[in-house]
Length: 321
Image (cartoon, rainbow, N blue to C red; front, side):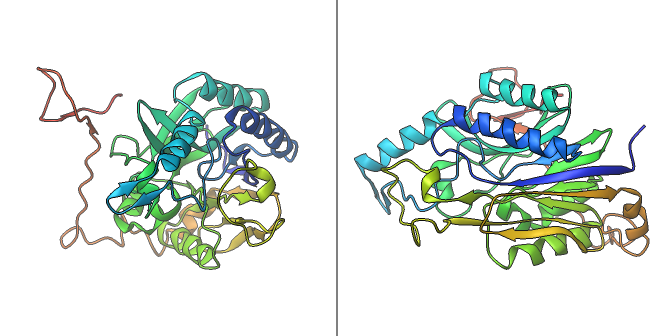
């Protein structure tokens, strides 16, 4: 039986850049603090494990790359994690130790390619889902590959239906519609967008989807980065990423946050019964839809660049499960 009232938490803090081992140790401390506040679902920011290398250009110019930029990419590649893999297993162990549903942004390594991903862990430590960012933004496309439709889960859990949409993916109307159609209730939006415009966007998503929105942003200071990190900071103690995390209800009401310029763990008790009340007058994939005029087709196949003879389709195979 699913619980109607659930305590959720969003974590605003910094990873240890280029050091996944120390970052995961920090995740354990932060999870312990959230669990002490009664959190049953805990969301961490985008690219928390592996880091978001804000300010780096990796030596890219149109038509050329530098040797130094290749060195920084190799360093970034080495600090990513595999999922499944040993460090992902450690994250699962932390979820099990604190008996929480953990939703966390990671930089995922698969062969020579990195992905901005979100991993989902159940309170028994199992990795129950993964979402790879469909469209990296601007220079992110230099260091991250693109996901496909096979990793768009909305997971039916004892605390509600949980999914994740990463940072500026939230500005893709069709992706949001796909998540609404899957019945998402706890809409997780890990990000590094620290602008004043982010919270209005999250309130819009909550109003549009009639769902609870959890958004967790990083806080990144000079001290979180190695001494040779080449990005410039506004001032030694001023954050390069300043946060803005929040929790929003299904009628757009702000339940917690936003918080800027400091670490924070924001919590709120949510009542999933409010979702039906909110959908009374707006259900964009139900009574407020017009399928006779507009329809969305979502390709959820796993698309592979290389297939073996006998695989279904041309350059694709069905998604696992």
